[in-house]
Length: 345
Image (cartoon, rainbow, N blue to C red; front, side, top):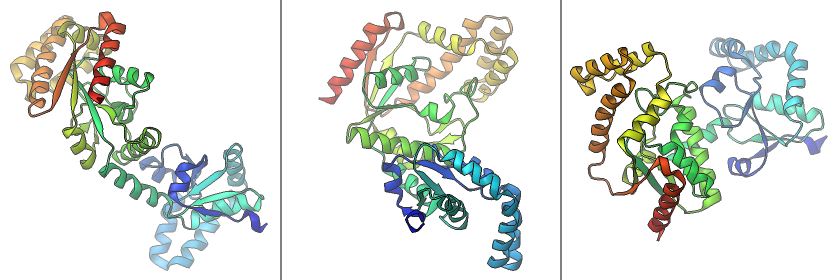
């Protein structure tokens, strides 16, 4: 039995291994933020955790522990089965907030089953501290720029397919950054979860690609409700930019294909949100075009606004340009790759 006592391991060991990460915090804590890829199996659910917290404040630690065991007692059999179902294929790594009582309860249940189980030293708090440190010292970056509608996200994925390190920040944030960027997307993660996922993505990049720069899209500080961390945003803002130059007509067509099928009332609401920045006269013209089903006119009015904002954002940046024609995609991809390889030299 001694050989199956829970084994404490460091975060570095945990990230480098192949473990089934089990987060035994409450479902509310997990929903707020967690280690990417971890599975939630709460020792105490939201209500139980609230009760235990109150008991701790009123009567101290021993009374809180006793209440927690009373609440958990009738659930031990079900919970044991849940842990077994989650730990069939890979070594198990269990953690709670700080590596305390909850993770020890869960790991002990598996140890009683003569099953090797690992405990993350310091729990989720250790991962969170590590993630924030990672984000303050990001790897070297190269920025893929271009006017709205140029297809930068698609191009990043094509770069990845060619073996060039690239990261889709908008994909991590579940938002495309503009006033219309949340349409058709999954619910955005909390900012803490966005940071957790970004940090792990950057770590994997450095593990796999060493000092090679990673390509990202040119972003403002906020992607929907997710904010880029200060250190990361500073590095992105100072990185060299390669801007793809796509014709206005192609950009308008691509954006219409992406957003034109949404309900007009929703498109009108999103257009109205731009009134202060694009001016009431232009917003009114866009609304009239939308109401009259002149979708291309609506989109071109919006592009006038977005293009002016883009040009303002170019000021003071180190920018090279590369023409790109989506009607000649493969030839344009080849030319873009050649330009990228030239920038490495």
